[in-house]
Image (cartoon, one colour):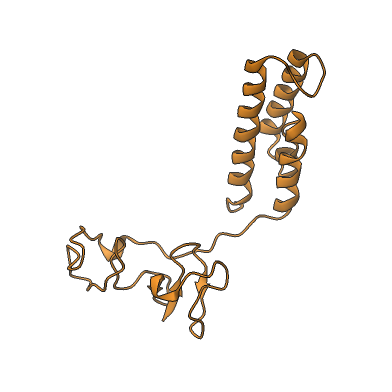
Length: 159
């Protein structure tokens, strides 16, 4: 039997009592079978259950059908993901957006964010910092949107 950490999703080896990635106790983990399907536990409280149970005997929560689970697939970062994050975050502090998208070959969003960078720089008067609160809030919002988008891109499997 294999165990998947409840906190980070990492597979805990059988000879360990704690998750090697986040330190969570293995007792809180979800046991899975060889195909990666969760076995016999309530997703709410972690109490044991059988495949025919409709409600948890421990917490009373309605239990999902055990056949609806998809196999556990660990999430891996795409190639050049770390460099894409750095290109999104570091120049983003200076209102230069889209470089991480261009590295990941997401051309349309990369060029869109570069165009937004030029517009923000033009509105700021070609300086790093704007005295206008609305422009500053706009640049912070664009920074967070493009950072979240680059994280989504690098953790999505390639087709």
